[in-house]
Length: 149
Image (cartoon, rainbow, N blue to C red):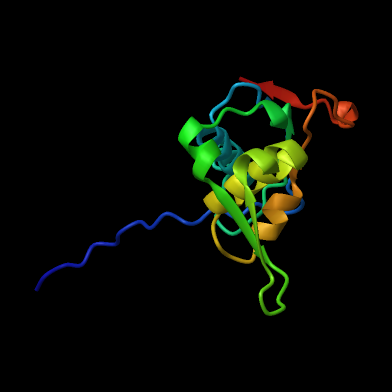
């Protein structure tokens, strides 16, 4: 007869109670848009934490300043378009990258980060923890955000 040995199975860690999050400050001046969005998405999901659990919002907040000074490839500046629809016939609106950077630079970063987050019910909750400001001023000094390079 063959003997069956027990195999130890690791349990999935689930944080108990309220998860306390950190606040991070990122300066977007001169940063490439895609690499910046990847870094922000990882922080919002909580992949950098040792207690990371899939399906749990880790309550980490990211404050991005100088969004109007983010770097983008010159080809992207010419060719990238942002679309939205009014849900009426013929209601498709198109905005170019350079025009979007002039009027709403925060939407450019938010759209890039949203594309790098998982497409599930938690996406909106992750994006609620993202604060983007076009200039160097932000109202979150009281939270003492950690400055990330």
